[in-house]
Length: 439
Image 1 (cartoon, rainbow, N blue to C red):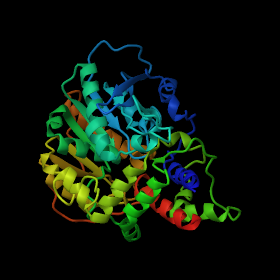
Image 2 (cartoon, rainbow, N blue to C red):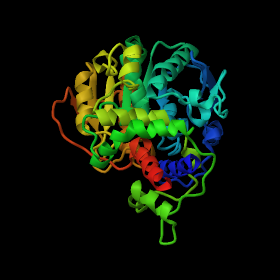
Image 3 (tube, rainbow, N blue to C red):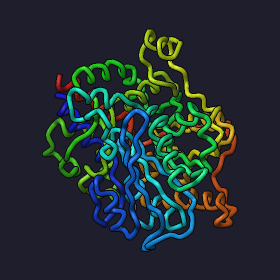
């Protein structure tokens, strides 16, 4: 049963993670370095071993397109992917429009992280994720471990390797969550960031917009506990057929999935091409999704909830402590969209108010979605150019006084909504719904 759920789970996630408007070849996730080199850039692979034994794969683009060497020291930028994704999310749009390539061409030393548990960081010094004996322990992880261990140690590695004191951080979705966790739990890391740009960075969930999913979140613990008992701890699939537009010949389960995940609406978008989506699917631990589910249910942003008894043993209180964003002193810009049902505008503005050196920027397109930050054909004009210009100003590499669409210290509670909760809780909806059907 759970293998079937994993298969459908993967179809949903991969279909919602498609890039837009591509005609160039797309390489498998495992060939990301080959893909980078195909586009005319130098590509390097680095391994980082965390304190708890996970082996993480980093990708580096040290300089711009068609350059053979770089003699001068370049400012460093580190990019972290979202839930279920991987480092290749920052090169999906090719040399002209992708964040990673644009920064490399502008004179930056670009590093792309991969979180524990995705296909490229699915290794451990002792645990075998494919072993029934080790798998549960290997995937006993959430976004807290990714922030406090993975991002922390990748940052340390990059700074030491490049002989730098600071770097610029860009995180999409859970990549933003990991930053918030790291710098609130280990405030000393704030000094290591010259600037931070969070793209739909998920944190507070006081105003999670979708009522049905908010109701479903009440069952998070039941679903997660049952799944773990059945051995379903990883959300990953080895391969999938191409996803095509649903028609009258689709079987009922396929139709149900499209209906549940609003894929029928997305498939009407002519900018999205049919293709093999499996190489976009990085994989994750089910606990990552459950942790977001807990926060949606409890309307908060706090550590994993083990239950009152174990919470007292671990945290010293019956409820988990919240992440204290007032401890985040880094220079943070939170980019958001009013079309995001994964992250409400009011929660973004509340997070900005609680961080002493943060500001909010609304993407100037009303229907810009959660995934559009890394996949939309116009993301360069609406997002990348702004971030690049702001970062260049910090490095004194270019003078530009443009400062549009910024809310500093905002206090207005405007609501928002969005399309594809694929990377977090609508995936949980598919598990729950299919669980009912199969049983």
